[in-house]
Image (tube, rainbow, N blue to C red; front, side, top):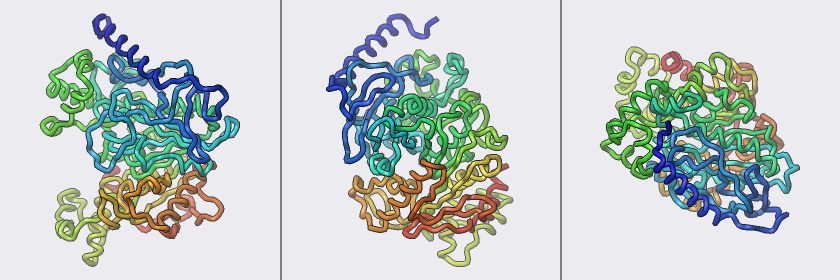
Length: 529
């Protein structure tokens, strides 16, 4: 029996038809044979020329996840006739304004948001260039491909094709419910945002050759939640063969605190209780009838957030048949070349007043294990105490989980591993204190070379030089699985034989042996249990 009465289904189909007609207004007939036209599996798209790079924006890679498709696995997008104009970003996915430094260049929020963008320097489809597919961060609660700092044009100039995709966030992307699991062909629910990313990877596999890309040479990379996602896809059997290399910037799905995964069964109970209490809705029909903005507002308002289960990925039994650490420990991950690391000041630089309570906070957090933690984070002066407290904050937040990902791959994987730490103090901007740290997300603009679009920053020649080097390291890795190349400081592999060397990315990049390994091992003896 249908979950929707016939009148509601008819209304949905009518709405979908009208949306398609509106969308078709953006599909114009154009002269055939244009170098800015590309034939995808669903129809032709027409991009725009930006210097030596052809840019295609707002291409749908899945059907709009609205109406009866809300909280379903992404469905195939509809084909179109004529030439679809792909010169502007699609809407960003529904989200509350959690992150003030995220400034989007798109039409605004929409539940119909599953589009992707392609930047290609290829002149034709015979180029077979390596492909880099980016997943943005934002705690699985925010983000958009239209952010200027992750614009793909400059990175693409390094001889790679850059693809970025939107994916469902928050309650739209990670809500679970027993009824959702029951209706799913995979008997799973809760990982719709991750499945959107998988759908985008499948689109790349099927279509990127037409843009001059090599579908058998794809690198998946991301930052923060995007990095957590990359590690999850590396663990997932569903993603096998969809990408051949992985880059993680600040985060791995090995944490029990930051973005820690729940089991689907536990999540179903808590999310269903949340829906009943906050929305007074107990059926999928009732929940899917709630307007998107109302669904978002009621999920994120202060009264609800006190009891809000953070909506993020779960161990669903399908995309992730087990936890990510368990999959890696068993050697069941997709064994790929891995480049990963984090920033020097992931948790910021703490003040002296905060440090004064450092020992008390460690005692509270670690209990009987506090003495060995304090011994690992030694501090003989006020300056060292500030550094030690800042380091432990960063490790607790995101550095340890990234380290654990590297260690897990080093233990059961056979492919090369490269580790970095971004040390460059990022220039001042309206959202960050002037020149005080290499803060979380600070490396993104350097990887993408997007400084020219971020005019509020006071970039220096040293920043520009480091950015060019990082673009080369990242694109070299995408091409060959090795970041090294002519004119670059040598980046050794990360393994016992090299002394677990780390590439420190600053004004003068240099590789050094990991001098904090003992600290990570101490934390692992506590958190890794």
